Image 1 (cartoon, helix red, strand yellow):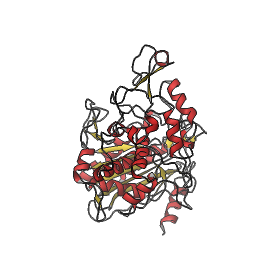
Image 2: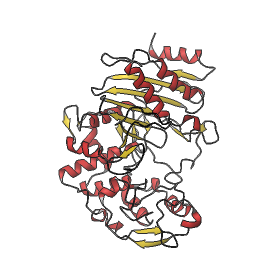
Image 3: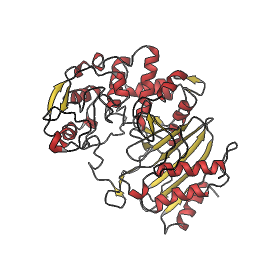
Image 4: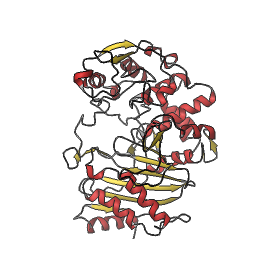
Length: 427
C-alpha cells in the first residue's frame, strides 16, 4: 500500500479524534526501538486541541532521520499531508541564520563586532532613547502609567553590531507592554515597507526602548543587523543567504519568498481556548500585518522573514553541529561556532544562558527535575522550535503554525525532547 493511501486509511479510522499520524522512517544506525511513547505525546497535543498539527524530526550529524512523526487535526487541515518538505513560516528561527552570515562577514573583514551601526546606517545617527517622564529606563517597564507618555534623550554610547546580535541595541516589537512605544512602531506597519531603505526610514523615526548595552531586550535587533549586512556587502539578505549558505552547502528548503507552486499553511489562533484561523491583525508582534512570502517583495527581514522546510532547516542545524562545515563546504570557522555558543547574556538565569541568539540550557526542567543539558535551542513566533545536541550529535526540529496555546501545552518542547531521549537510551 502506498504512503498516501495508508495515510488516508488512518485518517478514516481516526476521524472521530480528527488526528492522522504519518508513516515514519527508521534508517540504519541510531535507532528508536519503540516509537509509540513519543508518538502518543505528539498525538496527544493535537487531539487535545492545542495544535493544528505537529511535525517532529530528529537527525544525526550525517543527515539520517532517526525519528520522524506528524500528527494532523484533519478537521482543521482536511486531507493535508505534512512532512519534512512542507514550507513553514519560521519567524525568529531566521535570526540564527542571519547571525551566522554576519559572523561570516566578520571572518572576511567586512564587519567588526564593535563597529558602530551608524557607520553602515547613517540614518540612525539621530536615534533617541525613550525614557519615563522622570528619566527612568523603560526596558523592563510594564505599567503605562509610569512609561507613557515618554520623553526622548540622546544616546550615551554608540550602538554596535555586537549590541544587535545580543539584543542589547534597544529595538523592540510592536506588541510590547508600553502601548505608546508599541503603537508608534505598529503605525509604521514595517512589514509592508517597500524595501530596505523604506524600513530604515521607518525605524529611524522611532526611539529606542533603552540605551545600547544597558540590558537585553528582545526585539527587531536582528532585522536591523540584516540591514547593516546589506549595506556592508552591497547585496540583499536574500542574495547573502543563497550565495553563502544554501548554494555552497546544497541546502534545499531555506529561503526568502515562497517557491513557485508551493503553498503555505493557514495561520491558527487558540486565543479563545479553541483553534480557529487567525484574524487579520491578530499576530501583532510587528504591527497590523505579518511578513509576507512574496518573492517579488524586496524586503528581507533578518529576524522574522524566512520560510523553511523541516528538512532544509535541519540541514542548516547540521552545519552548526558540524562546527561550520556541511557537504564539503567550510562556511564558518570552528572558533566562530564556539563563540556563538559561549555565554553572552542572561548569565544569571536559572535555566541556562544566551550565546549569540542561541539559548544554551543547563538541563533544568520547569518542574525542577533535570534532563539533557548543553543543548543549543531556539524557536519562532508560530510555535516552531529547534535544538542542536553537540554531545549526542543530533539536531531536532518541531514544526507547527499556531498563535496562542493553552496552558496545558506549555513545556511541550521539554516533554517531547525528554521522551525522545528516553527512547534512545532505552529507558
